[in-house]
Amino acid sequence: MRLVEELMRAQADEHHPELRAALHHLLGAGGKRIRPTLVLLVGNMLGADPNKLITLAAAVELLHTATLVHDDLIDGALLRRGNPTLNARWTPAATVLTGDFVFARAAKLAAETDCLPLMRLFAETLAIIVNGELTQLFTSRGIASRENYNQRIYAKTASLFEMSARAAAMISPVDEASIEALRNYGYQVGMAFQIVDDILDFTGEQAEVGKPVGSDLLHGLITLPTLHYIENHPSDPDVSLLLNGNYSLEKERMFRLVQSIRQSEAISQSLSEAGKYVDEALGTLADMPAGIEKQSLEDLARYIVDRRL
Amino acid sequence: MRLVEELMRAQADEHHPELRAALHHLLGAGGKRIRPTLVLLVGNMLGADPNKLITLAAAVELLHTATLVHDDLIDGALLRRGNPTLNARWTPAATVLTGDFVFARAAKLAAETDCLPLMRLFAETLAIIVNGELTQLFTSRGIASRENYNQRIYAKTASLFEMSARAAAMISPVDEASIEALRNYGYQVGMAFQIVDDILDFTGEQAEVGKPVGSDLLHGLITLPTLHYIENHPSDPDVSLLLNGNYSLEKERMFRLVQSIRQSEAISQSLSEAGKYVDEALGTLADMPAGIEKQSLEDLARYIVDRRL
Image (cartoon, rainbow over all chains, first blue to last red; front, side, top):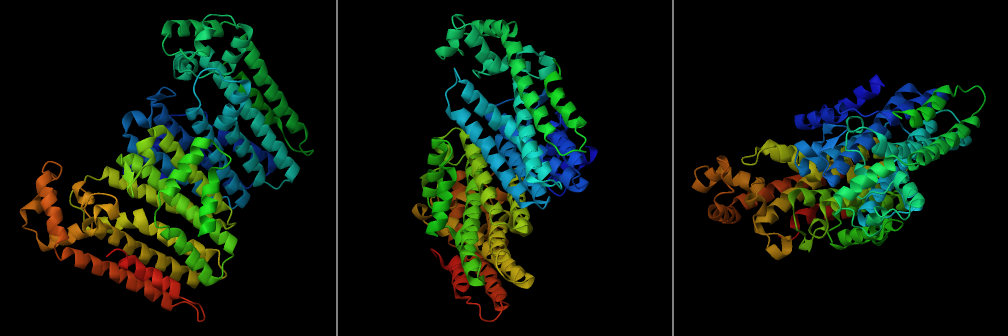
Protein backbone atom coordinates (compact mmCIF):
# COMPACT_ATOMS: atom_id res chain seq x y z
CA MET A 1 0.00 0.00 0.00
CA ARG A 2 2.95 2.32 0.60
CA LEU A 3 4.02 1.79 -3.01
CA VAL A 4 0.47 2.53 -4.16
CA GLU A 5 0.55 5.82 -2.23
CA GLU A 6 3.89 6.76 -3.76
CA LEU A 7 2.70 5.96 -7.25
CA MET A 8 -0.45 8.05 -6.79
CA ARG A 9 1.48 11.04 -5.48
CA ALA A 10 4.02 10.85 -8.31
CA GLN A 11 1.31 11.42 -10.92
CA ALA A 12 1.59 15.21 -10.92
CA ASP A 13 5.36 15.41 -10.54
CA GLU A 14 6.10 16.71 -14.01
CA HIS A 15 3.22 19.12 -14.05
CA HIS A 16 2.23 22.49 -12.67
CA PRO A 17 3.23 23.01 -9.00
CA GLU A 18 -0.31 24.06 -8.09
CA LEU A 19 -1.58 20.81 -9.53
CA ARG A 20 0.97 18.83 -7.55
CA ALA A 21 -0.12 20.62 -4.39
CA ALA A 22 -3.77 19.87 -5.17
CA LEU A 23 -3.10 16.17 -5.71
CA HIS A 24 -1.17 15.95 -2.44
CA HIS A 25 -4.00 17.74 -0.65
CA LEU A 26 -6.57 15.34 -2.10
CA LEU A 27 -4.58 12.23 -1.24
CA GLY A 28 -3.53 13.59 2.14
CA ALA A 29 -7.17 14.07 3.15
CA GLY A 30 -7.22 10.39 3.96
CA GLY A 31 -9.88 7.93 3.10
CA LYS A 32 -9.82 4.28 3.95
CA ARG A 33 -8.15 3.19 0.67
CA ILE A 34 -10.55 0.28 0.69
CA ARG A 35 -10.68 -0.02 -3.13
CA PRO A 36 -6.91 -0.39 -3.60
CA THR A 37 -6.88 -2.76 -0.60
CA LEU A 38 -9.45 -4.89 -2.39
CA VAL A 39 -7.27 -4.89 -5.53
CA LEU A 40 -4.15 -5.90 -3.61
CA LEU A 41 -5.86 -8.64 -1.59
CA VAL A 42 -7.53 -10.21 -4.64
CA GLY A 43 -4.39 -10.03 -6.74
CA ASN A 44 -2.12 -11.35 -3.98
CA MET A 45 -4.50 -14.20 -3.36
CA LEU A 46 -4.47 -15.14 -7.05
CA GLY A 47 -0.76 -14.62 -7.71
CA ALA A 48 -0.85 -11.50 -9.90
CA ASP A 49 2.35 -9.66 -10.82
CA PRO A 50 2.98 -7.22 -7.91
CA ASN A 51 3.93 -4.27 -10.14
CA LYS A 52 0.79 -4.54 -12.23
CA LEU A 53 -1.24 -4.89 -9.07
CA ILE A 54 0.21 -1.72 -7.55
CA THR A 55 -0.45 0.14 -10.81
CA LEU A 56 -4.05 -1.09 -10.92
CA ALA A 57 -4.62 -0.24 -7.25
CA ALA A 58 -3.39 3.33 -7.84
CA ALA A 59 -5.56 3.63 -10.97
CA VAL A 60 -8.68 2.56 -9.08
CA GLU A 61 -8.11 4.93 -6.16
CA LEU A 62 -7.36 7.84 -8.52
CA LEU A 63 -10.53 7.16 -10.50
CA HIS A 64 -12.42 7.23 -7.20
CA THR A 65 -10.62 10.45 -6.19
CA ALA A 66 -11.47 12.15 -9.49
CA THR A 67 -15.17 11.37 -9.10
CA LEU A 68 -15.07 12.77 -5.54
CA VAL A 69 -13.49 16.03 -6.76
CA HIS A 70 -16.27 16.57 -9.29
CA ASP A 71 -18.90 15.40 -6.76
CA ASP A 72 -17.81 17.96 -4.20
CA LEU A 73 -18.01 20.66 -6.85
CA ILE A 74 -21.51 19.52 -7.82
CA ASP A 75 -22.76 19.36 -4.24
CA GLY A 76 -21.00 22.59 -3.33
CA ALA A 77 -19.49 20.60 -0.45
CA LEU A 78 -16.88 22.44 1.58
CA LEU A 79 -15.80 19.52 3.74
CA ARG A 80 -15.09 15.87 3.05
CA ARG A 81 -13.93 13.56 5.84
CA GLY A 82 -13.74 16.71 7.96
CA ASN A 83 -11.11 18.28 5.65
CA PRO A 84 -11.66 21.25 3.31
CA THR A 85 -12.51 20.08 -0.21
CA LEU A 86 -10.63 21.39 -3.22
CA ASN A 87 -13.85 23.18 -3.98
CA ALA A 88 -13.62 25.16 -0.74
CA ARG A 89 -10.11 26.44 -1.53
CA TRP A 90 -10.10 26.74 -5.31
CA THR A 91 -12.19 28.19 -8.08
CA PRO A 92 -14.66 25.88 -9.81
CA ALA A 93 -12.50 26.06 -12.94
CA ALA A 94 -9.43 24.73 -11.17
CA THR A 95 -11.52 22.05 -9.47
CA VAL A 96 -13.07 20.81 -12.74
CA LEU A 97 -9.65 20.66 -14.39
CA THR A 98 -7.97 18.96 -11.45
CA GLY A 99 -10.65 16.27 -11.53
CA ASP A 100 -10.06 15.86 -15.27
CA PHE A 101 -6.33 15.60 -14.71
CA VAL A 102 -6.79 12.89 -12.08
CA PHE A 103 -9.07 10.99 -14.50
CA ALA A 104 -6.38 11.22 -17.15
CA ARG A 105 -3.72 9.82 -14.82
CA ALA A 106 -6.02 7.05 -13.62
CA ALA A 107 -6.63 6.06 -17.25
CA LYS A 108 -2.91 6.14 -18.00
CA LEU A 109 -2.11 3.88 -15.07
CA ALA A 110 -4.92 1.50 -16.05
CA ALA A 111 -3.43 1.32 -19.56
CA GLU A 112 -0.06 0.41 -18.05
CA THR A 113 -1.47 -2.88 -16.77
CA ASP A 114 -1.30 -3.99 -20.43
CA CYS A 115 -4.73 -5.58 -20.38
CA LEU A 116 -7.20 -4.40 -23.00
CA PRO A 117 -10.38 -5.89 -21.48
CA LEU A 118 -9.41 -4.07 -18.28
CA MET A 119 -9.29 -0.74 -20.16
CA ARG A 120 -12.76 -1.34 -21.52
CA LEU A 121 -14.02 -2.23 -18.06
CA PHE A 122 -12.40 0.90 -16.67
CA ALA A 123 -14.13 3.16 -19.20
CA GLU A 124 -17.47 1.39 -18.74
CA THR A 125 -17.29 1.75 -14.97
CA LEU A 126 -16.63 5.48 -15.29
CA ALA A 127 -19.70 5.74 -17.56
CA ILE A 128 -21.84 3.85 -15.01
CA ILE A 129 -20.71 6.10 -12.14
CA VAL A 130 -21.31 9.32 -14.08
CA ASN A 131 -24.63 8.15 -15.50
CA GLY A 132 -25.76 7.31 -11.95
CA GLU A 133 -24.92 10.82 -10.81
CA LEU A 134 -26.74 12.37 -13.76
CA THR A 135 -29.80 10.23 -13.05
CA GLN A 136 -29.75 11.39 -9.45
CA LEU A 137 -29.41 15.00 -10.60
CA PHE A 138 -32.36 14.77 -12.98
CA THR A 139 -34.60 12.75 -10.65
CA SER A 140 -36.57 14.86 -8.24
CA ARG A 141 -35.79 14.25 -4.59
CA GLY A 142 -38.35 12.73 -2.25
CA ILE A 143 -39.57 9.17 -2.02
CA ALA A 144 -37.32 6.68 -3.76
CA SER A 145 -38.17 3.06 -4.36
CA ARG A 146 -36.10 0.14 -3.22
CA GLU A 147 -35.22 -0.42 -6.87
CA ASN A 148 -33.99 3.18 -7.31
CA TYR A 149 -31.93 2.81 -4.16
CA ASN A 150 -30.25 -0.36 -5.34
CA GLN A 151 -29.48 1.15 -8.73
CA ARG A 152 -28.10 4.26 -7.11
CA ILE A 153 -25.75 2.51 -4.69
CA TYR A 154 -24.60 0.19 -7.46
CA ALA A 155 -23.65 3.13 -9.69
CA LYS A 156 -22.18 5.16 -6.85
CA THR A 157 -20.17 2.49 -5.04
CA ALA A 158 -20.64 -1.17 -5.90
CA SER A 159 -19.69 -0.71 -9.58
CA LEU A 160 -16.17 0.40 -8.65
CA PHE A 161 -15.77 -2.34 -6.00
CA GLU A 162 -16.95 -4.84 -8.62
CA MET A 163 -14.46 -3.47 -11.13
CA SER A 164 -11.62 -3.49 -8.59
CA ALA A 165 -12.01 -7.17 -7.71
CA ARG A 166 -12.71 -8.20 -11.31
CA ALA A 167 -9.78 -6.25 -12.76
CA ALA A 168 -7.39 -7.68 -10.16
CA ALA A 169 -8.55 -11.16 -11.16
CA MET A 170 -8.21 -10.29 -14.88
CA ILE A 171 -4.49 -9.60 -14.48
CA SER A 172 -4.02 -12.83 -12.47
CA PRO A 173 -3.31 -16.33 -13.81
CA VAL A 174 -6.86 -17.67 -13.23
CA ASP A 175 -9.77 -18.90 -15.35
CA GLU A 176 -12.99 -17.10 -16.33
CA ALA A 177 -15.00 -18.77 -13.55
CA SER A 178 -12.69 -17.33 -10.89
CA ILE A 179 -12.83 -13.88 -12.50
CA GLU A 180 -16.63 -14.07 -12.42
CA ALA A 181 -16.64 -15.24 -8.77
CA LEU A 182 -14.44 -12.32 -7.77
CA ARG A 183 -16.50 -9.86 -9.78
CA ASN A 184 -19.50 -11.04 -7.79
CA TYR A 185 -17.53 -10.82 -4.52
CA GLY A 186 -16.63 -7.20 -5.32
CA TYR A 187 -20.26 -6.41 -6.18
CA GLN A 188 -21.63 -7.89 -2.94
CA VAL A 189 -18.99 -6.24 -0.78
CA GLY A 190 -19.59 -2.91 -2.53
CA MET A 191 -23.36 -3.03 -1.94
CA ALA A 192 -22.77 -3.88 1.73
CA PHE A 193 -20.21 -1.06 2.05
CA GLN A 194 -22.62 1.60 0.79
CA ILE A 195 -25.51 0.36 2.95
CA VAL A 196 -23.25 0.55 6.01
CA ASP A 197 -22.18 4.07 4.96
CA ASP A 198 -25.84 5.02 4.73
CA ILE A 199 -26.48 3.56 8.21
CA LEU A 200 -23.46 5.42 9.64
CA ASP A 201 -24.94 8.65 8.30
CA PHE A 202 -27.67 8.12 10.94
CA THR A 203 -25.78 6.41 13.75
CA GLY A 204 -22.27 7.87 13.52
CA GLU A 205 -21.01 10.88 15.38
CA GLN A 206 -20.31 14.01 13.34
CA ALA A 207 -16.58 13.88 14.17
CA GLU A 208 -16.35 10.34 12.82
CA VAL A 209 -18.44 10.64 9.69
CA GLY A 210 -17.21 14.15 8.90
CA LYS A 211 -20.70 15.55 8.35
CA PRO A 212 -23.84 16.21 10.45
CA VAL A 213 -25.93 13.23 11.58
CA GLY A 214 -28.73 12.47 9.12
CA SER A 215 -27.25 14.78 6.50
CA ASP A 216 -28.40 12.60 3.59
CA LEU A 217 -32.03 12.81 4.67
CA LEU A 218 -31.75 16.50 5.53
CA HIS A 219 -30.69 17.00 1.90
CA GLY A 220 -33.68 15.01 0.71
CA LEU A 221 -31.75 11.86 -0.10
CA ILE A 222 -33.65 8.70 0.84
CA THR A 223 -31.42 5.80 1.85
CA LEU A 224 -32.14 2.31 3.18
CA PRO A 225 -32.81 3.19 6.85
CA THR A 226 -35.41 5.75 5.72
CA LEU A 227 -36.99 3.27 3.30
CA HIS A 228 -37.38 0.77 6.17
CA TYR A 229 -38.75 3.44 8.50
CA ILE A 230 -41.36 4.50 5.93
CA GLU A 231 -42.47 0.89 5.49
CA ASN A 232 -42.74 0.42 9.26
CA HIS A 233 -44.36 3.77 10.07
CA PRO A 234 -46.41 4.85 7.06
CA SER A 235 -48.63 7.04 9.24
CA ASP A 236 -45.88 8.98 11.06
CA PRO A 237 -46.86 12.58 10.18
CA ASP A 238 -43.17 13.47 9.67
CA VAL A 239 -42.95 10.85 6.92
CA SER A 240 -45.53 12.82 4.92
CA LEU A 241 -42.95 15.61 4.61
CA LEU A 242 -41.01 13.29 2.35
CA LEU A 243 -44.07 12.23 0.38
CA ASN A 244 -45.11 15.77 -0.49
CA GLY A 245 -41.57 16.98 -1.16
CA ASN A 246 -41.65 19.66 1.58
CA TYR A 247 -38.59 18.36 3.38
CA SER A 248 -36.59 21.54 2.83
CA LEU A 249 -39.25 23.77 4.39
CA GLU A 250 -39.63 22.04 7.74
CA LYS A 251 -36.18 21.79 9.27
CA GLU A 252 -37.34 21.03 12.80
CA ARG A 253 -39.64 18.19 11.84
CA MET A 254 -36.87 16.79 9.62
CA PHE A 255 -34.42 16.79 12.56
CA ARG A 256 -37.09 14.94 14.58
CA LEU A 257 -37.50 12.40 11.78
CA VAL A 258 -33.74 11.77 11.76
CA GLN A 259 -33.88 11.05 15.50
CA SER A 260 -36.89 8.73 15.04
CA ILE A 261 -35.08 6.73 12.37
CA ARG A 262 -31.88 6.63 14.39
CA GLN A 263 -33.68 5.09 17.36
CA SER A 264 -35.86 2.72 15.35
CA GLU A 265 -35.54 -0.88 14.23
CA ALA A 266 -34.88 0.49 10.69
CA ILE A 267 -31.19 0.58 11.62
CA SER A 268 -30.94 -3.10 12.56
CA GLN A 269 -33.07 -4.07 9.55
CA SER A 270 -30.68 -2.19 7.25
CA LEU A 271 -27.70 -3.74 8.96
CA SER A 272 -29.19 -7.16 8.47
CA GLU A 273 -29.49 -6.44 4.73
CA ALA A 274 -25.84 -5.42 4.59
CA GLY A 275 -25.07 -8.69 6.36
CA LYS A 276 -26.88 -10.63 3.63
CA TYR A 277 -24.64 -9.07 0.98
CA VAL A 278 -21.61 -10.01 3.06
CA ASP A 279 -22.90 -13.60 3.32
CA GLU A 280 -23.26 -13.68 -0.45
CA ALA A 281 -19.70 -12.38 -0.80
CA LEU A 282 -18.41 -15.11 1.52
CA GLY A 283 -20.39 -17.63 -0.51
CA THR A 284 -18.66 -16.64 -3.76
CA LEU A 285 -15.31 -17.41 -2.12
CA ALA A 286 -16.44 -20.98 -1.53
CA ASP A 287 -16.17 -21.54 -5.31
CA MET A 288 -12.47 -20.63 -5.40
CA PRO A 289 -10.08 -23.37 -6.54
CA ALA A 290 -8.61 -25.48 -3.74
CA GLY A 291 -5.32 -24.30 -2.26
CA ILE A 292 -6.11 -20.60 -2.49
CA GLU A 293 -5.81 -18.75 0.82
CA LYS A 294 -9.11 -16.90 1.21
CA GLN A 295 -8.77 -15.67 4.78
CA SER A 296 -7.93 -12.04 3.98
CA LEU A 297 -10.93 -11.62 1.66
CA GLU A 298 -13.19 -13.17 4.30
CA ASP A 299 -11.79 -10.72 6.84
CA LEU A 300 -12.33 -7.80 4.45
CA ALA A 301 -15.98 -8.76 3.86
CA ARG A 302 -16.62 -8.98 7.62
CA TYR A 303 -14.82 -5.69 8.25
CA ILE A 304 -17.25 -3.97 5.85
CA VAL A 305 -20.16 -4.49 8.29
CA ASP A 306 -18.23 -4.36 11.54
CA ARG A 307 -16.46 -1.05 11.05
CA ARG A 308 -17.44 1.66 13.53
CA LEU A 309 -20.68 -0.06 14.53
CA MET B 1 -17.83 10.33 -41.69
CA ARG B 2 -21.56 9.54 -41.60
CA LEU B 3 -20.75 6.33 -39.71
CA VAL B 4 -18.56 8.30 -37.30
CA GLU B 5 -21.48 10.68 -36.61
CA GLU B 6 -23.84 7.76 -36.01
CA LEU B 7 -21.40 6.08 -33.66
CA MET B 8 -20.91 9.29 -31.67
CA ARG B 9 -24.64 9.88 -31.33
CA ALA B 10 -25.28 6.28 -30.26
CA GLN B 11 -23.07 6.69 -27.18
CA ALA B 12 -25.85 7.88 -24.88
CA ASP B 13 -28.58 5.62 -26.22
CA GLU B 14 -28.88 3.38 -23.19
CA HIS B 15 -28.60 6.21 -20.72
CA HIS B 16 -30.69 8.99 -19.26
CA PRO B 17 -32.87 10.82 -21.85
CA GLU B 18 -31.55 14.20 -20.70
CA LEU B 19 -28.04 12.98 -21.32
CA ARG B 20 -28.98 11.78 -24.79
CA ALA B 21 -30.50 15.18 -25.54
CA ALA B 22 -27.33 16.90 -24.30
CA LEU B 23 -25.08 14.75 -26.47
CA HIS B 24 -27.21 15.43 -29.54
CA HIS B 25 -27.16 19.15 -28.76
CA LEU B 26 -23.36 19.11 -28.44
CA LEU B 27 -22.82 17.17 -31.64
CA GLY B 28 -25.52 19.07 -33.50
CA ALA B 29 -23.79 22.38 -32.78
CA GLY B 30 -21.50 21.59 -35.66
CA GLY B 31 -17.81 21.97 -35.76
CA LYS B 32 -15.61 21.13 -38.68
CA ARG B 33 -14.91 17.54 -37.57
CA ILE B 34 -11.33 18.12 -38.65
CA ARG B 35 -9.83 15.70 -36.10
CA PRO B 36 -11.91 12.68 -37.19
CA THR B 37 -11.26 13.69 -40.81
CA LEU B 38 -7.54 13.53 -40.08
CA VAL B 39 -7.97 10.06 -38.53
CA LEU B 40 -9.93 8.77 -41.52
CA LEU B 41 -7.58 10.23 -44.12
CA VAL B 42 -4.44 8.87 -42.45
CA GLY B 43 -5.96 5.44 -41.83
CA ASN B 44 -7.42 5.14 -45.32
CA MET B 45 -4.10 6.13 -46.82
CA LEU B 46 -2.30 3.44 -44.82
CA GLY B 47 -4.89 0.68 -45.20
CA ALA B 48 -6.28 0.49 -41.65
CA ASP B 49 -9.34 -1.61 -40.84
CA PRO B 50 -12.34 0.68 -41.58
CA ASN B 51 -14.28 -0.30 -38.45
CA LYS B 52 -11.38 0.42 -36.12
CA LEU B 53 -10.81 3.68 -37.95
CA ILE B 54 -14.41 4.81 -37.48
CA THR B 55 -14.21 3.88 -33.80
CA LEU B 56 -10.97 5.83 -33.35
CA ALA B 57 -12.35 8.84 -35.24
CA ALA B 58 -15.41 8.93 -32.97
CA ALA B 59 -13.20 8.55 -29.86
CA VAL B 60 -11.02 11.49 -30.89
CA GLU B 61 -13.95 13.81 -31.64
CA LEU B 62 -15.69 12.87 -28.37
CA LEU B 63 -12.51 13.53 -26.40
CA HIS B 64 -12.37 16.95 -28.10
CA THR B 65 -16.08 17.53 -27.36
CA ALA B 66 -15.64 16.63 -23.67
CA THR B 67 -12.80 19.14 -23.28
CA LEU B 68 -14.96 21.83 -24.95
CA VAL B 69 -17.83 21.16 -22.52
CA HIS B 70 -15.58 21.68 -19.49
CA ASP B 71 -13.87 24.65 -21.18
CA ASP B 72 -17.15 26.44 -21.73
CA LEU B 73 -18.02 25.89 -18.09
CA ILE B 74 -14.64 27.26 -17.00
CA ASP B 75 -14.87 30.31 -19.25
CA GLY B 76 -18.53 30.84 -18.41
CA ALA B 77 -19.05 30.92 -22.18
CA LEU B 78 -22.67 31.08 -23.27
CA LEU B 79 -22.07 30.65 -26.99
CA ARG B 80 -19.82 28.41 -29.04
CA ARG B 81 -19.87 28.56 -32.83
CA GLY B 82 -22.86 30.89 -32.42
CA ASN B 83 -24.90 28.20 -30.62
CA PRO B 84 -25.83 28.16 -26.92
CA THR B 85 -23.35 26.10 -24.90
CA LEU B 86 -24.55 23.37 -22.55
CA ASN B 87 -23.41 25.73 -19.84
CA ALA B 88 -25.94 28.36 -20.97
CA ARG B 89 -28.84 25.91 -20.71
CA TRP B 90 -27.85 23.64 -17.85
CA THR B 91 -26.58 23.84 -14.32
CA PRO B 92 -22.82 23.60 -13.78
CA ALA B 93 -23.38 20.20 -12.12
CA ALA B 94 -25.06 18.75 -15.19
CA THR B 95 -22.38 20.28 -17.41
CA VAL B 96 -19.48 18.82 -15.41
CA LEU B 97 -21.09 15.37 -15.41
CA THR B 98 -21.96 15.47 -19.10
CA GLY B 99 -18.34 16.29 -19.88
CA ASP B 100 -17.26 13.37 -17.68
CA PHE B 101 -19.70 11.06 -19.42
CA VAL B 102 -18.38 12.07 -22.84
CA PHE B 103 -14.82 11.41 -21.61
CA ALA B 104 -15.89 7.96 -20.45
CA ARG B 105 -17.43 7.12 -23.82
CA ALA B 106 -14.40 8.43 -25.68
CA ALA B 107 -12.17 6.19 -23.54
CA LYS B 108 -14.44 3.21 -24.13
CA LEU B 109 -14.33 3.69 -27.91
CA ALA B 110 -10.56 4.12 -27.80
CA ALA B 111 -10.30 0.81 -25.91
CA GLU B 112 -12.37 -0.87 -28.63
CA THR B 113 -9.59 -0.30 -31.15
CA ASP B 114 -7.77 -3.12 -29.31
CA CYS B 115 -4.45 -1.32 -29.27
CA LEU B 116 -2.80 -0.85 -25.88
CA PRO B 117 -0.18 1.76 -26.89
CA LEU B 118 -3.08 3.78 -28.33
CA MET B 119 -4.85 3.71 -24.93
CA ARG B 120 -1.73 5.01 -23.24
CA LEU B 121 -1.39 7.75 -25.85
CA PHE B 122 -5.05 8.65 -25.38
CA ALA B 123 -4.66 9.06 -21.60
CA GLU B 124 -1.40 10.99 -21.99
CA THR B 125 -2.96 13.38 -24.48
CA LEU B 126 -5.84 14.10 -22.12
CA ALA B 127 -3.29 14.86 -19.38
CA ILE B 128 -1.41 17.25 -21.70
CA ILE B 129 -4.59 19.11 -22.66
CA VAL B 130 -5.80 19.46 -19.07
CA ASN B 131 -2.36 20.41 -17.75
CA GLY B 132 -2.18 23.13 -20.43
CA GLU B 133 -5.50 24.55 -19.29
CA LEU B 134 -4.42 24.50 -15.66
CA THR B 135 -1.18 26.27 -16.54
CA GLN B 136 -3.17 28.93 -18.38
CA LEU B 137 -5.49 29.29 -15.38
CA PHE B 138 -2.64 29.72 -12.91
CA THR B 139 -0.54 32.00 -15.11
CA SER B 140 -1.45 35.66 -14.87
CA ARG B 141 -2.69 37.20 -18.08
CA GLY B 142 -0.71 39.87 -19.86
CA ILE B 143 2.45 39.55 -21.92
CA ALA B 144 3.21 36.01 -22.98
CA SER B 145 6.47 34.89 -24.54
CA ARG B 146 6.73 33.09 -27.86
CA GLU B 147 7.71 29.98 -25.90
CA ASN B 148 4.58 30.19 -23.72
CA TYR B 149 2.47 30.63 -26.82
CA ASN B 150 3.92 27.58 -28.53
CA GLN B 151 3.46 25.46 -25.41
CA ARG B 152 -0.09 26.68 -25.03
CA ILE B 153 -1.21 25.95 -28.60
CA TYR B 154 0.53 22.57 -28.46
CA ALA B 155 -1.40 21.58 -25.33
CA LYS B 156 -4.66 23.11 -26.54
CA THR B 157 -4.72 21.90 -30.13
CA ALA B 158 -1.64 20.34 -31.68
CA SER B 159 -1.40 17.54 -29.09
CA LEU B 160 -4.75 16.11 -30.17
CA PHE B 161 -3.98 16.51 -33.90
CA GLU B 162 -0.67 14.76 -33.25
CA MET B 163 -2.45 11.97 -31.40
CA SER B 164 -5.10 11.61 -34.11
CA ALA B 165 -2.60 11.10 -36.92
CA ARG B 166 -0.30 8.93 -34.80
CA ALA B 167 -3.10 6.73 -33.47
CA ALA B 168 -4.52 6.20 -36.97
CA ALA B 169 -1.05 5.10 -38.09
CA MET B 170 -0.68 2.83 -35.04
CA ILE B 171 -3.72 0.79 -36.04
CA SER B 172 -2.47 0.56 -39.65
CA PRO B 173 -0.10 -2.05 -41.14
CA VAL B 174 2.96 0.25 -41.27
CA ASP B 175 6.38 0.47 -39.63
CA GLU B 176 7.55 2.72 -36.78
CA ALA B 177 9.13 5.24 -39.17
CA SER B 178 5.80 5.86 -40.88
CA ILE B 179 4.04 6.21 -37.52
CA GLU B 180 6.63 8.78 -36.50
CA ALA B 181 6.29 10.67 -39.80
CA LEU B 182 2.52 10.86 -39.37
CA ARG B 183 2.82 11.89 -35.73
CA ASN B 184 4.96 14.77 -36.95
CA TYR B 185 2.49 15.56 -39.76
CA GLY B 186 -0.32 15.76 -37.16
CA TYR B 187 1.78 17.99 -34.92
CA GLN B 188 2.66 20.44 -37.73
CA VAL B 189 -0.89 20.61 -39.04
CA GLY B 190 -2.22 21.13 -35.50
CA MET B 191 0.15 24.03 -34.80
CA ALA B 192 -0.84 25.64 -38.13
CA PHE B 193 -4.52 25.10 -37.36
CA GLN B 194 -4.38 26.93 -34.03
CA ILE B 195 -2.32 29.82 -35.44
CA VAL B 196 -4.91 30.28 -38.19
CA ASP B 197 -7.69 30.16 -35.57
CA ASP B 198 -5.86 32.89 -33.66
CA ILE B 199 -5.56 34.97 -36.85
CA LEU B 200 -9.26 34.49 -37.63
CA ASP B 201 -10.08 35.82 -34.19
CA PHE B 202 -8.79 39.17 -35.52
CA THR B 203 -9.74 39.02 -39.18
CA GLY B 204 -12.97 36.99 -39.20
CA GLU B 205 -16.45 38.44 -39.06
CA GLN B 206 -18.40 37.80 -35.86
CA ALA B 207 -21.03 35.75 -37.69
CA GLU B 208 -18.33 33.43 -39.03
CA VAL B 209 -16.18 32.99 -35.95
CA GLY B 210 -19.17 32.96 -33.58
CA LYS B 211 -17.61 35.51 -31.20
CA PRO B 212 -16.68 39.22 -31.31
CA VAL B 213 -13.61 40.27 -33.33
CA GLY B 214 -10.47 40.33 -31.17
CA SER B 215 -12.19 38.52 -28.32
CA ASP B 216 -9.02 36.68 -27.26
CA LEU B 217 -7.12 39.92 -26.74
CA LEU B 218 -10.12 41.62 -25.12
CA HIS B 219 -10.01 38.80 -22.57
CA GLY B 220 -6.31 39.37 -22.02
CA LEU B 221 -5.16 36.37 -24.05
CA ILE B 222 -2.04 37.12 -26.10
CA THR B 223 -1.82 35.18 -29.36
CA LEU B 224 0.61 35.23 -32.26
CA PRO B 225 -0.71 38.34 -34.11
CA THR B 226 -0.40 40.33 -30.88
CA LEU B 227 3.10 39.00 -30.23
CA HIS B 228 4.15 40.15 -33.71
CA TYR B 229 2.47 43.53 -33.26
CA ILE B 230 4.28 44.08 -29.94
CA GLU B 231 7.63 43.26 -31.56
CA ASN B 232 6.92 45.65 -34.43
CA HIS B 233 5.43 48.49 -32.40
CA PRO B 234 6.97 48.42 -28.93
CA SER B 235 6.25 52.11 -28.41
CA ASP B 236 2.53 52.04 -29.34
CA PRO B 237 0.99 53.47 -26.14
CA ASP B 238 -1.87 50.96 -26.37
CA VAL B 239 0.66 48.12 -26.13
CA SER B 240 1.64 49.36 -22.66
CA LEU B 241 -1.87 48.40 -21.51
CA LEU B 242 -0.82 44.80 -21.97
CA LEU B 243 2.52 45.28 -20.27
CA ASN B 244 1.05 46.75 -17.11
CA GLY B 245 -1.90 44.35 -16.96
CA ASN B 246 -4.55 47.08 -17.20
CA TYR B 247 -6.24 45.65 -20.25
CA SER B 248 -9.55 45.10 -18.50
CA LEU B 249 -9.84 48.72 -17.36
CA GLU B 250 -9.46 50.46 -20.71
CA LYS B 251 -12.03 48.95 -23.04
CA GLU B 252 -11.87 51.68 -25.68
CA ARG B 253 -8.11 51.59 -26.05
CA MET B 254 -8.26 47.81 -26.22
CA PHE B 255 -10.79 47.99 -29.07
CA ARG B 256 -8.43 50.41 -30.86
CA LEU B 257 -5.51 48.02 -30.32
CA VAL B 258 -7.55 45.18 -31.87
CA GLN B 259 -8.14 47.38 -34.94
CA SER B 260 -4.44 48.31 -35.13
CA ILE B 261 -3.40 44.65 -35.08
CA ARG B 262 -6.09 43.68 -37.56
CA GLN B 263 -4.79 46.23 -40.07
CA SER B 264 -1.11 45.61 -39.46
CA GLU B 265 1.50 43.36 -41.02
CA ALA B 266 1.27 41.18 -37.87
CA ILE B 267 -1.51 39.28 -39.66
CA SER B 268 0.55 38.36 -42.72
CA GLN B 269 3.56 37.56 -40.54
CA SER B 270 1.46 35.16 -38.46
CA LEU B 271 0.01 33.63 -41.59
CA SER B 272 3.47 33.09 -42.94
CA GLU B 273 4.38 31.19 -39.74
CA ALA B 274 1.33 28.99 -40.16
CA GLY B 275 2.50 28.39 -43.71
CA LYS B 276 5.88 27.20 -42.44
CA TYR B 277 4.19 24.56 -40.29
CA VAL B 278 2.19 23.45 -43.32
CA ASP B 279 5.40 23.19 -45.36
CA GLU B 280 6.89 21.02 -42.63
CA ALA B 281 3.77 18.86 -42.68
CA LEU B 282 4.05 18.44 -46.45
CA GLY B 283 7.73 17.59 -45.99
CA THR B 284 6.96 14.71 -43.62
CA LEU B 285 4.76 13.18 -46.31
CA ALA B 286 7.76 13.02 -48.63
CA ASP B 287 9.16 10.23 -46.42
CA MET B 288 6.15 7.97 -46.94
CA PRO B 289 6.81 4.62 -48.61
CA ALA B 290 6.40 4.61 -52.41
CA GLY B 291 2.96 3.74 -53.74
CA ILE B 292 1.01 5.48 -50.99
CA GLU B 293 -1.50 8.04 -52.25
CA LYS B 294 -0.72 11.21 -50.30
CA GLN B 295 -2.92 13.68 -52.16
CA SER B 296 -5.68 13.90 -49.56
CA LEU B 297 -3.27 14.66 -46.70
CA GLU B 298 -1.57 17.31 -48.87
CA ASP B 299 -4.98 18.84 -49.54
CA LEU B 300 -5.86 18.77 -45.83
CA ALA B 301 -2.62 20.55 -44.87
CA ARG B 302 -3.25 23.28 -47.46
CA TYR B 303 -6.89 23.65 -46.40
CA ILE B 304 -5.70 24.42 -42.84
CA VAL B 305 -4.21 27.76 -43.96
CA ASP B 306 -6.61 28.54 -46.80
CA ARG B 307 -9.90 28.20 -44.89
CA ARG B 308 -11.91 31.42 -44.62
CA LEU B 309 -8.96 33.68 -45.41
